[in-house]
View 1 (cartoon, rainbow, N blue to C red):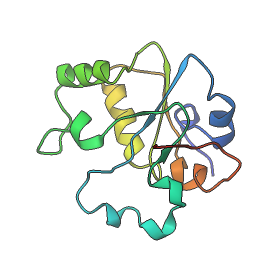
View 2 (view 1 turned 120 degrees about the vertical axis):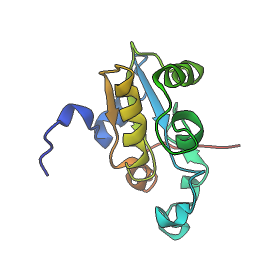
View 3 (view 1 turned 135 degrees about the vertical axis):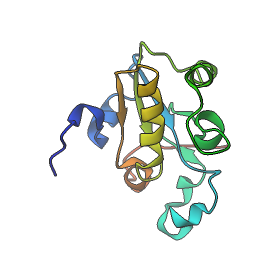
Length: 142
């Protein structure tokens, strides 16, 4: 597959090699609270720790509560900026967003682009790949 804007897509090997990079921030954007998440993912298709795990060092952004208003449009720029500050997002760091399959992560990345962030990438294979590779580390909730 050829991507027209490859700098915005992050591959598994790159992410695994950069987990300890102090200039990188990783955010889990998994859609836990959307209505009918079973339409997006089914439990049967996930490894057990997919439910409670995340890529090591990742922070969490909730799609509905952090970025979207009640009518499912993006919050106004000032509110987005405040949410990003509250989440510890720094516009001077590289950011990688991921989710279950790479869809919700694009929304979060787009919101960061709306704020002027130019160093954000999407791990488009997300947990559907990461959590199913036993050679890749996962942190799980205790």
